[in-house]
Length: 439
Ligand code: SF4
Ligand code: SF4
Image (cartoon, rainbow, N blue to C red; front, side, top):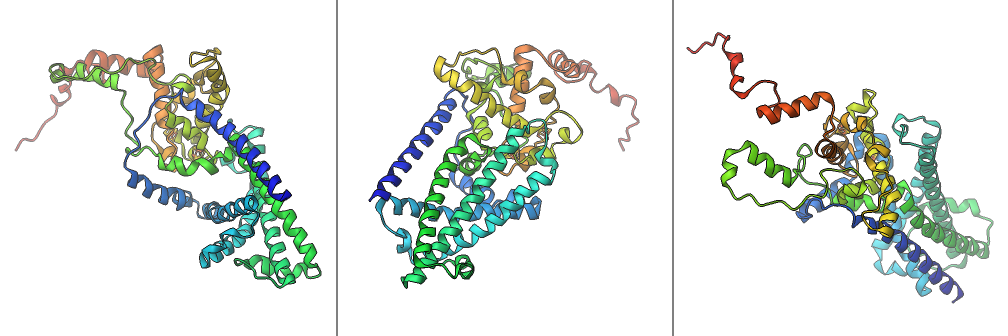
């Protein structure tokens, strides 16, 4: 009974802290702008199965991709065992999900094997991160705290796997010593058991009890650490893939108010059509975190900081300051900085800082070629160019600020209806001197 009360109390504290943190993050969403509508449920479901559960996008580098995919798939099995532990802890029962029979045996066996596989892979990831000097993990946005966060998360996962293996060994050892039935299958624990041959049933019981508590407390700790860590993607990557913007990557979202103006200017027919008046626009484009869409912000929370986007960005590769990973990290940081004050003082809170300039420079956003390589590469379907283009829109439309070459183009479009520096009547002059064969 004491164990049950302590467990229920610990779980309540964990859920309370987690709910507080998540509620705080969710409260920031109300300051953001609307984004695409969430329809095409089946298309999104298939995409989620393919990209999130199939992990298809990370196999471009097959070895590391497979290693990451194994960790993800392993977690899916292990999660089942974690749910069982919570039920067991709350209701003072043992192996409550054994009612699933052969399915239970299979999932427990998979969880037991994956605990070992994940532990080995996490050691590999840690060594690679600390000693491998992988270019993808470097960059101006990767501060020492980013590396510490990644290493701490990996260490926590390693401890989770070790405690899970200990727990299974304790359980199997105790059951065999006492001659009781073993619920589920534990091939790795069975394999490692001879190493603990001299232990008594009491010792095995102790190992089981201690590692059970260590494992569940680590889960609670990890769950509350994640929202502050890059590993928040453990929770958000699957929903973020489901919420993917489904339009072709190269198609930028139009701004209704501007589309209307452009149509009225460029299309004579439009003047005679009833084009609905757009809503009053508070801000053109994105200057600060609250000007971004909820999807941009969701993207920033889902970013794993893996750097795959930056590693394929032509601007970054050719030495420009732009790093698409940094764009996402900066949006998250800025919302983390300003969000609590907006909650406290209202959306108009002004700290004389902004996402643009204090976090992301003009140089960075004008370096983007809008090639969409970053969005295509991102394993959790984050879309960076929409945010980058929206920051450009702010600069152009609200500050009339753009690189000199672009200003010439804008003037030409305004004066000539085309990007070139001559009138539309002269457009076909270039054919005059051609000897055209009309036969
Ligand atoms: S769209 Fe821009 S940020 Fe993304 S890869 Fe291309 S140049 Fe880089
Ligand atoms: S935006 Fe995507 S590809 Fe880039 S670091 Fe984040 S998760 Fe990785």
